[in-house]
Structure formats: C-alpha cells, structure tokens
Length: 109
Image (cartoon, rainbow, N blue to C red):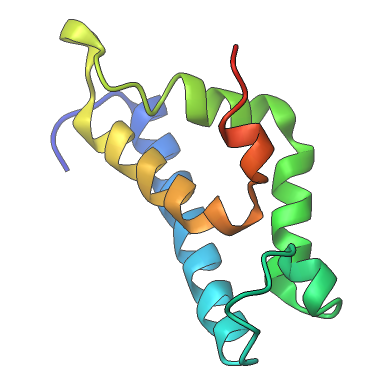
C-alpha cells in the first residue's frame, strides 16, 4: 500500500474484508444453483442463505451504503482522489450489487 493516514488504511482494510466476505458468500450462494432468471433477493429465493442475510444487514446501515456509493465511488475527486479507497469501495459495491434493487439504482436525486 502507498503511504496513507491510519484512518484511510483501516477503512481500506475493512472495506476489502467486507468485499471478501460478500464474494465468498456469493460463491456459496451460486453453489445452491439458483434460477438465473429469478431476479428476487437471495433471501427470498433461499431464506437460510448467508448472502441474503448479510445483504439485509448491510443495507440496514443506510448511512454507510450512502457514503459508500456517493462519496467513495466518485468518478472525479480532483486532488483528493485516493485510488485505493475508490478501488476498495467499487470492489465492495460490485460484491453487494445483487442486493441492490434496480429502482434504487436508477433513482433520480
């Protein structure tokens, strides 16, 4: 890692660990052989699945998810751009994308 203050380093470690957990749970969910055309939330299709439960818990933290999507995944930050923070945030967002409702994604602010 490049030099960063301790808060950013801790944030990157936490976000990367969350991404690893969601990536692992996604693989485990796919091993259950879900219907590829079923667009329902993983907790609806497989109620005992850890991925669905984890997504529900994460999305209850609305402040965190908003900050992740609106602040850490900005395309243009100017001089404040921290590529490692941006990369970690994008990795986590891609991992949790299956739990995001499409109406939320395309909502006009």
